[in-house]
Length: 286
Image 1 (tube, one colour):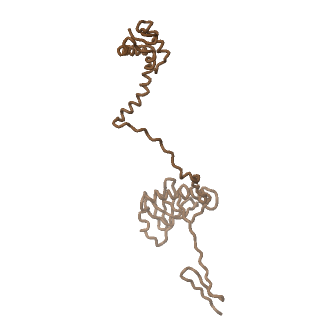
Image 2: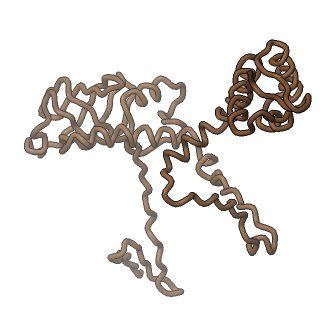
Image 3: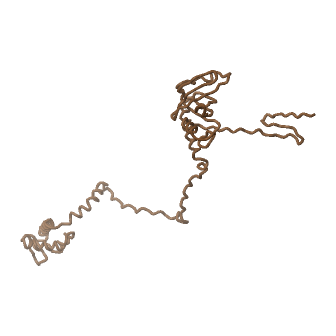
C-alpha cells in the first residue's frame, strides 16, 4: 500500500504528485463588491418583491452606510443601534464575539455619526447587520458618502449602455478653399487727414452744424424778401445808380427758388421798395 501526501505552496496553489509529474491547481479568487447606500435606498430594496434583495438590479456583497446614532444599547453578545440620515431611520445590529474588546466601540454613542458596512435583512424586521462600525473622523465623510451613494445609484440605473455611449464628436472645422489663405484681407478705407492746429471739438461742432447751416440758407417768403432788400442796399453803395442785375440776385440766393426770387423782385418794385435802373433787369432800392 502506498500513500500520497498533498502539500500546499505559499502562493495559494495545491500540488499533488502524479504519474505525469506535479500538477498545479490555482485557488479561485473571491470577488466581493461593495455599494454605498442610503437608508431610503435600503427601504426601497426591501419593499421590492422578490426573494433576493437587490439595489437597482445589482446584488452587492457589502453595503456601506453612514448615519447618525439616535440610540445605542450595548449587550454582552450584540450591539443594537437606531440610526438615521437625511432619508430615513433604520435599526442596526452588530453581533460580538466572546473576546470582543470594548475599546473598539469607543466613541459609538448617541449623537455621533458612524461609518458601517454589512448586509441588510428583512426578517424578523428590516435591519442592517453590521460587520464593522467606527465613528467618522471628519464631517467630510458624511458629504462624500452622500455623493458616492447618489453617483452609484445613477450609474446602476443608467446601465452599461449609457456608459458605453460614444461621446459627442467635435464638429469638423470647414476647410478653406485652396489658395484663399493667400488672398490679402479687405482693407478699411483710410481716414481723411485732419488739418493741423484744428481742435477735434471744432471739427465735431462743424460736422454737426453743417446740415443746419445749409438748411438756414434756404430762405423763403418774408425772410427771403428781407435778405434781398439787404443785398440790394449793399449793392447800391458799391454799384451806384446802375444797381444790381437780376442774375446776380439769383446767383446770391441760389439755394432759394429762382421763380420765387423773380416774383419777389416784381413785388418789391410794385410796392415801391425798389425800382429798375438802366433796364428791366437791374434793380436798386429807394
